[in-house]
Length: 408
Image (cartoon, rainbow, N blue to C red; front, side, top):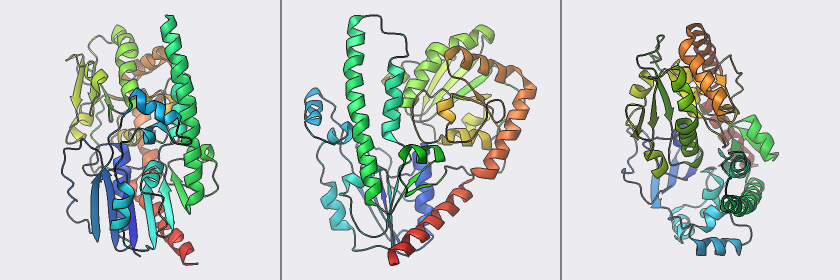
């Protein structure tokens, strides 16, 4: 089978959940036959685009993607460009379609593209039976963020209300445009892929297939039975990503003071590339913003709880599966854990507001029996449903079915 993978970013090193998923896709498809990889890269990328040893690709091309421009003038142009989501309208012109079509070679037996936006940027090519991976439903994320804007309780001044009204109108329009694009792409390709049955229901397209996220089972889980001194909370992820950055600020500003009222010496480690707002939270030893780390294992080894205070988003969180695999208790919001089919008090603790989240963290640090029962059930759920081997089997089956349907 001759395949093509079109990637929204070069996924090595795989520093985020989305890139971990993309690595598994590329490695699995490359095992099925000759594979070409066309990958965009972010303009500020500093890492070299080197393939890992042992990965056999027939051809590869990387291309720097467009820089975003969210200036007022660009936003006005966006309002005048019907149907285009803001993030695509804000992309400065780069000849992605021309470069891609001049590089791609004829027809393929199977094409996999990561992300709706990437498929649109390369010109929605018809180069063979095609799957588009929608591991994030952007319209869902925007609607959830919109609801959160009015729940924060910080709208004390008229100008704050006015700002929210304008932002709400923009987000509502942008969500509609993302929904339209997601639907249009889904109907233009053979299959689309989502992370969970919940997202499949939200998308509502008959050609949607669930390919769950996963994680490699560690030989030696690093979670520890006894809580350390001082106790350590770990939050990880790309802290430049809007939902994660919001979660970090909420954790430090609203949740941590309540935890410290019960456990004064508790510490927080925020691990991942930070935006400017998250970087300002750095206040060691109380709060440490580490930046990106070469390996998560040392961070996991010193964590007593993994916290996922995500207040809006879509898809499923690989960071939770990683914690399950390493036998580290997890406290999450319902949104943070959605799509994983988990129960509060069984595999993890769930909470919605700052007070209940802090209370759950205190329980997770003080109740030793609870910690044991959570990690036992969580590891079992991981082993049953979320190992990468399970995900890879789903990818292989979908690739063969889609390529075979194309033969017909």
